[in-house]
Image (cartoon, rainbow, N blue to C red):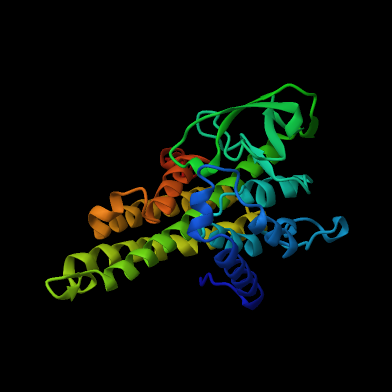
Amino acid sequence: MRFALGEDREALRSTARDLLAELCPPAAVRAAWTAVPDPAPWQALAEAGALALLVPESDGGLGLDETYLVPVLEEAGRAALPHPLTETALVAAPLGVTGPMVATDLGATGAVVSSAGFAEAFLLVSGGGLRLYEAREVDVDPVETVDASRHGGRVRPRGPGRPVTEDPAAVAAAFDRGALGAAAELLGLSRAMLALTVDYASQRHQFGKPIGSFQAVKHHLANARLEIEFAAPAVLHAAYAVAQGRSDAARAVSQAKWLAGAAAAVTGRAALQCHGAIGYTTEHDLHLYLKRSWALARTWGGADLHADRVAASMGI
């Protein structure tokens, strides 16, 4: 079976890529490490309809499905967008939460919620369900993490909030959508790291030749490309499985998250090795993508959790 994007989905991807290339360059991501992220890319995505792709037309959205949003999320990953697009557009919107920029503890690692420092609303686990709190209804304790642009924090409700769902199946589906979004972002990050390294390898010379002409460097980059190309159709398949409500959707999502995480890990190591000493300096843009990939690989379920889910689905 061939998994590829049609013209309309490619058009959405292209629009997102152009917007983010202009409004979320590496300088903007770097600035988000020490300040609240610039709202310009978020507002542009909202105006383009990205936040409402999964919202029914009757509620003012576009009424599309996950196969349209996942390519946009891949572009968000490629740009290392420091805003919670997955949480807002892919996790919260299908639950009827529209409008605010949403952070959630559904996929949090060690209860550290990404975007807690600037989110407008919080979708938090409450008993067996989910509850929505406005920013004024919670206390946030900032937590230093590997990727400071994510402004992580521990969140404590102090207001009543409002119930969103008590259905365990809806909560499980929301987690799967979050893992799918993380997989798409990891795929985009991998592509960004590979492109950055290919460009560097074509410009950096040793012994009178570009280092990209050396066999060892070629092997590193080829291995990274292979991992990316293996993960890409798995992410698209997972998006299709979720959109169609297939019985194997959870397994497809876990496969995609595992493969995308592996691709980011292999690509990140190759990028760091091929850049050499300069790649180890935090001043280099590679760190923006590398550290985001480290953070995302551990949120919405790490490699072990998703491997276990796949194994369990196969009766292993």
